[in-house]
Length: 367
Ligand SMILES: Nc1ncnc2c1ncn2[C@@H]1O[C@H](COP(=O)(O)OP(=O)(O)OP(=O)(O)O)[C@@H](O)[C@H]1O
Ligand SMILES: [Mg+2]
Image 1 (cartoon, rainbow, N blue to C red):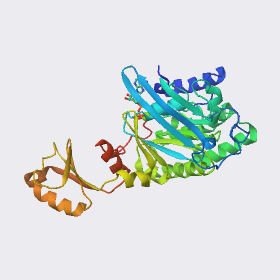
Image 2 (image 1 turned 90 degrees about the vertical axis):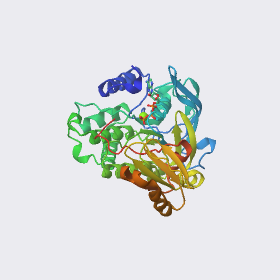
Image 3 (image 1 turned 60 degrees about the vertical axis):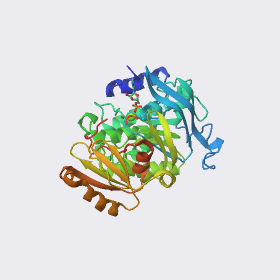
Image 4 (image 1 turned 30 degrees about the vertical axis):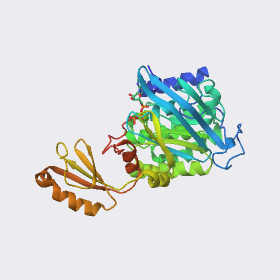
């Protein structure tokens, strides 16, 4: 079974067995002794200029991966420096989890190289994963154990003992609003609560590279806020973070540098402001019950996308009035009219012709 498709219990067992065998370091908790506090190949050089070779934590170059005939990743280049947050955005199937699994050392690229602090995770997973904390998309907690027991267990696997273990548990519980849940069995928790525990596990070892694959799926607003604050704090302390999400406001709140992934390719990279300045456009979007009608007489540029039509415009109010006049009888089928200000959503739309919207609603803890 592919590693990234294991069910929760199998996944946890995989992690445990891998640790015991020493084949895979710490796909969940980060691993080995606390790499930052106990010294590492890059210890003591935090805060160097971003992007300088010595400050790079992750370097991926020309990474491609196919599943049979399906090319999931095509020649991806990606670097992340200390203290940098990279928001990985892309629709379902874009290749986000595949890329993250390769960086975590769970999958090998077909072509290309990946290094974490100079170490190839596919060749030397134990060493590379000493630096990595990984919260995969599928929630992996040990269900029969309490929250506290999970954190102790994975903390110990990550090499933490006694006082440091206890302190770290207190820290992650405080940061992810888990204090009152510590004595509760994970099998009793809601999906969103389990996901918080799952993320806490990835943070136990204070990794130098933190991989969070859709960490806020099913989380409520308070939890999202707490996680965003924590991720920013960790970045301020020097952690390099790769954070995949469908929620654009999170990327904006994180002040992340953005990588837009589409059908296995990086289609744009830059700060939110850069991308919006380069590619963002104002639009008016109309959605209909059934296929969007054709507008013949408007002089505005119109794009048709199934039941939606969009007009590029810098004056949406004027365009709205004009287009309503032109709709004639079709106005009865109009379901919504949205003004899209230049934003990451409109950047994605102008580059791909499709909107990148967060799911309207997600089941609690969906994974
Ligand atoms: N183990 C696998 N075997 C076959 N195909 C796979 C496997 N894992 C992923 N894929 C395919 O590879 C492509 C990329 O999948 P991936 O899970 O990386 O996308 P994603 O961007 O994480 O999507 P989502 O937003 O839905 O999580 C998809 O078309 C998916 O169906
Ligand atoms: Mg995914």
